[in-house]
Length: 405
Image 1 (tube, rainbow, N blue to C red):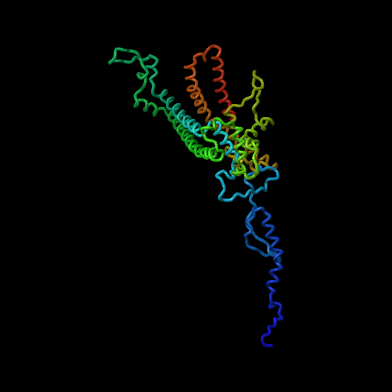
Image 2: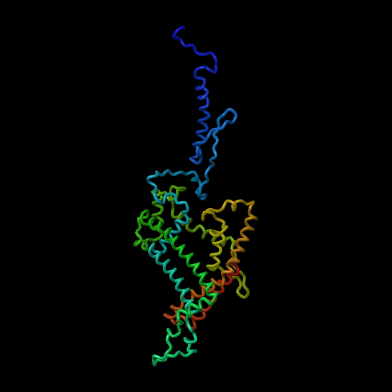
């Protein structure tokens, strides 16, 4: 009949059959979508499909991202804090909170950025003075003239009194004596390399502490001129107060003074725990002295180098224990690696022991000479043996520390 439409009888050409099939897939697609969204933003749901039997399955190469900080409090591992891009502060989501809070504490203890900067500069200048003045005393002074073992001809003056300039060698002779002493040249080269290393470290610290300086000024609202008048407890309370505004730590909604202290003292707490459990050999039985506790700065530095921040240490990212150290099955293998690392560090200590000992003697000499000049009473019979014993004990402690590694 004209003007009348008759639908085809074939199923393949039935009107709307494709739409019906697509509608039947909607529950499956909705399940896949809710599964992707339920991953809390940690899996990206934009990937091609693949056929699995008669059902479409999402095929994605993306993996679940692990948190960068595994010491999150219980119940807050999946805590997400949304901060709009425009309102993010420079201190939002600081990854290494241990190092950041330690620098905040150090800047407070050093009475501000300017005082810390001046102190670092004077330490560099002090090293130059000690090395250069020691070189001058060794190579540029004629001690025969200084101690009157050689007469000086004063042809232009009737005064035959020996003065200090008379014992100084000419610059050319001094330079030749320095170049002819190969051992002194090696020491000067090592000292120069060490000073360049300290200079690079100083520049790096200035750049890092400039951020802490801005943190005090902009976030804590504390001028550097007023910082010495603030106690550390007041600084901690301000850090706790600005957590909601700046979101320094994204793993917790709120910080406490205890959280800040734990991050600053993390490695020290580890050291205290190892001492309490008798894991560190600090107590020794010596002949005629009995049980003696031996724990010098050199030994402490070596322990920190082995466990915390040296090559092959137990921690990654300076705060998180490496995963392999959490597996009981790898204990023997890790113990063997730790033993080899301790052996190599001990050999390095043994090689550098003469240099360290010479530096300690020079540093003590230049540090206490001025004290003895201003306070001659320090060498009284009562104080003299104590000072000699202290200097001897310091020297012996460095020797033993270097030999034991």
